[in-house]
Image 1 (spheres, rainbow, N blue to C red):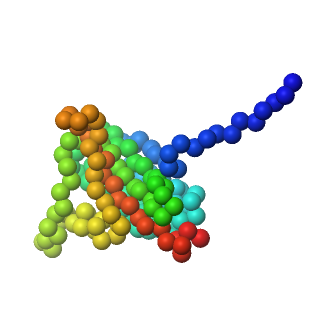
Image 2 (image 1 turned 90 degrees about the horizontal axis):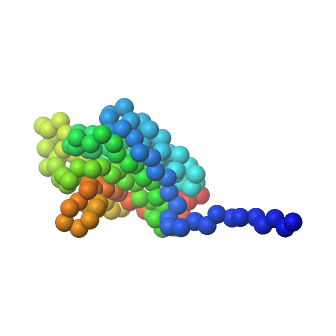
Image 3 (image 1 turned 90 degrees about the vertical axis):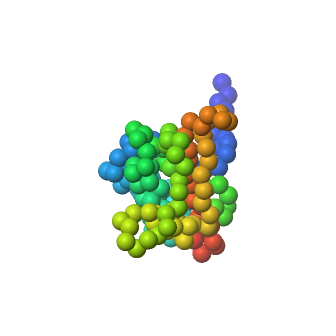
Length: 147
């Protein structure tokens, strides 16, 4: 009898994802997912920025939606890019606050804009009837990060 080894084939970018409750206490799990993903890829130098970004994206979902669950993803979309995203079932799109010093909130997307190489959102679901959105931010990976 001949045995053949089976090797899994990867399709799409490598990544990690987890669905979690949309509540403040779950933000820690989102940060741990980002840290574990970046460490796996040898990109621990991006962990501080990555955890700050996922914290902001996650807290926006908690604060501005009535969703019960969110999906946090960390993907290595290219050799020089890592994408961190939070998807929810809300149709409300993110709005950048004015950054008024007297406001308690509203500066999260300004912070993401300063830290990320680029950021945005994608509507999920069939055209014309969004089933939610995915808010994301990308980090540029330099040779120094990839060590």
